[in-house]
Structure formats: C-alpha cells, structure tokens
Image (cartoon, rainbow, N blue to C red; front, side, top):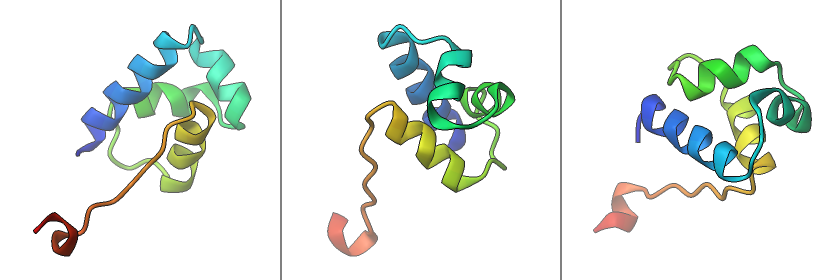
Length: 70
C-alpha cells in the first residue's frame, strides 16, 4: 500500500459515513488541511495522526510482514 491508496481508503470511508472533511478533522483532533493532504496521498504526513484518522473512521490497521506472507 502507498500513500495514494491510503488516501483513497480514507476518502471513500469518510464519504460512506456521510462525513465532511471538517467533521472528520474535528472528530480526530487534526486540522482540515491534514485530512485534505491525507486524502490527496501526501507521502510525508505524520503516521500518528494518520492512525488517529483511521481509528476515528473505525478502520483496523494490520501489517503483514514477509514472514507472515509466506
């Protein structure tokens, strides 16, 4: 997954929940600019804030290491 794919997921889930960017930003304690940049796939965003947004949307994040993939 890359930053563009993550941005698409966030945007699609936000819209599916009927939230505006402003509402999502307020719900997770980040600025609207952060939501805009995250949805646009900006690769240099803070991971902690991105995880806050995903948690606010009810998304679960998992990591598959190479050993687990085999």
